[in-house]
Length: 517
Image 1 (tube, helix red, strand yellow):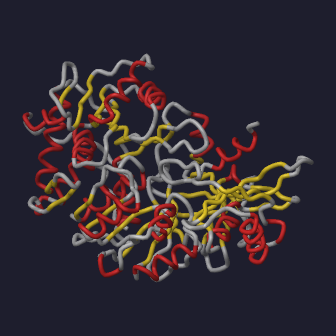
Image 2: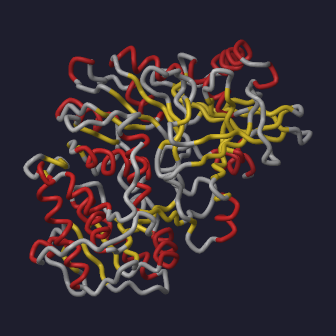
Image 3: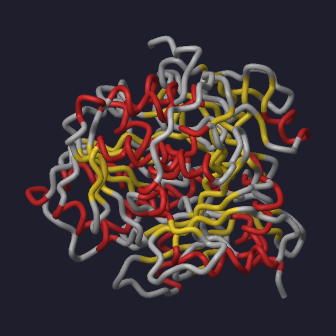
């Protein structure tokens, strides 16, 4: 572990360490490429445009852009200028963006032309006034006061603002899987820490790698995968602005032959279920990462059997910026989330905050240098989550005698049946191992007597049809592998499960469905 410099502007740092790679390709988005020299030049010129527009240091700018080569230019350009980019999900509603504009008090918006209409609807619904709107890839000339993103190429590059490692660099909004999204504030040094602790030693990213992340740049997971990690070693990144369907993924895997692939369990399951899954000989993957939800053991085993490479399943969070608990090369055990990433401390505690013995489900606490500074304008949530040096994750885990951690679900998702806790993830993992099941989600539902019983929502594999026979088979299968009280009393078949854009199952939406008449 190296020491993060006290004075650090991360955009300037990336330009400096890649000064000898000016001609090497940093980004490919399917339509355009961007060399490391061009990335440094365009970022400095974009900073110059922000200065020309009168944007001041520490002012916020909403970054609502699809994954093209313009995204890293805007993000790093803002850091270069000391402006704080607020990267947001491109799949949200005008009401969501209206909230984020007011909450962040963004003075500018960087927006893809295809999202401009949604942004304008959001601006009509909020009282906050944005000073500048910079539009990427417009299909026709823009009317005032809209500004063409390409205008930055006509502006002289400006020197990077001198910032400290502890200074606010950027925001991300939490995924909002349990309520209103929170503005998570990160520093320049936090990016350094995730590279130093996970990107290089665990993922093992190298200059020779070609990296492809299905998770988008506006996610903490995707930001590390497709910007922070690869740029720290001079690797090449494949960007994709379309939805990550198996077919879109296969096209990139076979055409560009990335060596590092980063996905989520739902996507890995869909890939393995697809009829056009490419053979091992047609791809070049050497290692994969997974986060967002726990990776079932069967899924990892089948992926490794087909492609001959491992998926390093881990857990991170928007608050910790990237993965802090992970499977590692030489210490991989599918069905678990692995062990703490060196440099992070992890503890399991009971509801009173006291340590618990191995084999007991507890609340996950983390301590590490990449923790966010706060939730913006949310003191109560900040106090409940950031507890001195420790962060309470809101996840439930169990640790075995060998030090491997296994996910038990979100704290709000735990089910108490007959006075005993049931982990929905444990039941879901067993169901997902059945040959008829693609994926499953488990919740607790009151029966006629008001007693909580487990109910499973199941997505069947292609070619399987819902039937009472399959229901009975699945219930029996769970009973064979788990304590009888854990088996799902009800099984409901569905075509898809409600999820966040990061692929996390939204069990609270299933619970809402159960209460609707």
